[in-house]
Image 1 (cartoon, rainbow, N blue to C red):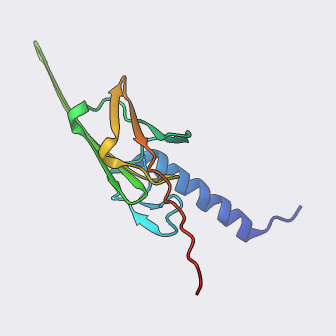
Image 2 (spheres, rainbow, N blue to C red):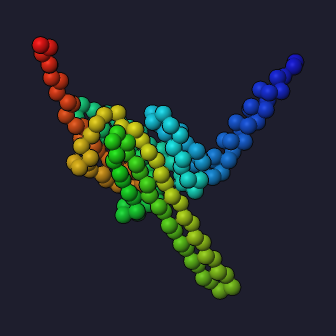
Amino acid sequence: MWLDPFEEMRRIEERMNRLFREFWGGRHLALGEDIGRHALVPFEYREPYADVQETDKEVIVTAEIPGVEKGDIKLRVHDSTLEISAEKKQETEERKKGYYLAERSYNKFYKVLTLPAKVLSEKAKATYKNGVLEVRLPKAEPEKRTTIKVE
């Protein structure tokens, strides 16, 4: 059976890319969701898993950001996007007789989500519990249509 060498090279490239993404915990260049452009995500950032849900009255965003302190989470709403960023810093030190262990870890989380509707950012509410961030954004009233009489 003959295998297409270009197809095999494409499969190897996909496996290598997946390996590097899993190793580094994120993507260097991420496609902005529904933005239609490439958003450059710094290499040291991880993208949290996130869900966007739309109801009649609000948009609900849920994101997994484990191990982060509530005060280290920053949220920004701009036009129809929600930007989530957070930092996780951890230091441990253990001393025993004839033994010393010091570890430091530092992770950054970053994600930009396109919201499905216009929202009232000043009335947004965010909660963080057990590593899960929930942001509730009330929808803005739809603009009223006006009829213009042609004279």
